[in-house]
Length: 426
Ligand SMILES: *Cc1c(COP(=O)(O)O)cnc(C)c1O
Image (tube, rainbow, N blue to C red):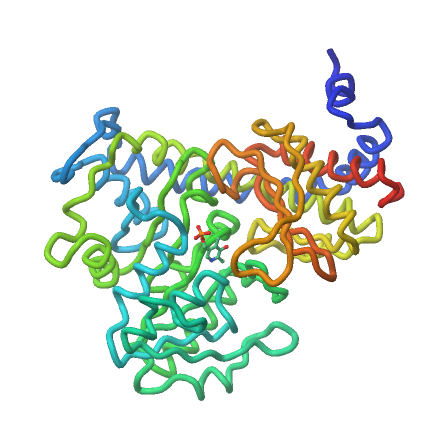
């Protein structure tokens, strides 16, 4: 059976497919550059695994306290080597990205200290962690204050405001690499490096944490290569490679990571405890695959921006901008278009392809939200997924795709659903 016959059975027309091929012809150079970066990152991961002499014995399960878990310890050395840090904490006991960030913040801030975000408001879930929105057990409740310097209207760093916000109390600075669901640009590692250098010039003993969610392996350097004391992220995003079913990581200086380990388990215990429960093969193999998976997701994002921008929809980032994370926003202009788009992403999924996404209420949102995801791992956003709040400009944020070909099909089917409903014209 040829490709178009199979795609036809999934509802994809020749016209939409051909439009996609036209767009792809112009993307060969950009795709080549992505593959070159993936090759560098693959080499980094391989070298780290070889250097740490990973053997089949390191995949064994441990239970109970998990003392002397060599597989767990070597995985953390592999992460530390890839991120070029002294230490790493990589654990299934870290339940998600927000949890990893919470551990990193609460371990390295004491009562009386101040936290500074020099890049505006942090990601939604962190606002309760910090206490920007009051919440039980927030940092604010423990006497940690918070200050923020907003970005300039053009998305650049406001260095005067940042200098003014750094006080004798400032202990930790948090920088979010990806825009998340905000409208600001995502930052390149180089930009983050410039910001870190500035902050450390103003206050040499300040520590810097980077929320690295969605950014891992997009570039060939990471924020830890440009002065971050901690980089933090989720294993059901980029570095889990789609195989990790849970988990988070913190890579950084030994001083910071030790404190994180004491916070995660208990003072005195730290990294010595934490059974792996048989999860290590997925962590190792997922990390091994992650550079390729991220490359596929990046190709999908660039393909979507070029396809949709060509049809008159505003895309953030736009069709030609460089990429600093795997998230693509497309402004569709109406609820009906958001529903059609999400129906296409859902219809292309390997799991739950038969489900129909509909807008619904979500805690913490003042408008309804639509979500499309048919993932092997619940909530995994390195797998192809799309979501967005039902409000102007009716933007869907989509990301992921464990393989480029799946991302491509999802995007084509999203357009097909819009064309079928007369919401896009080829
Ligand atoms: C996803 C994300 C988080 C939180 O991760 P969860 O795993 O959803 O808790 C934090 N910051 C950014 C920028 C993210 O994209």
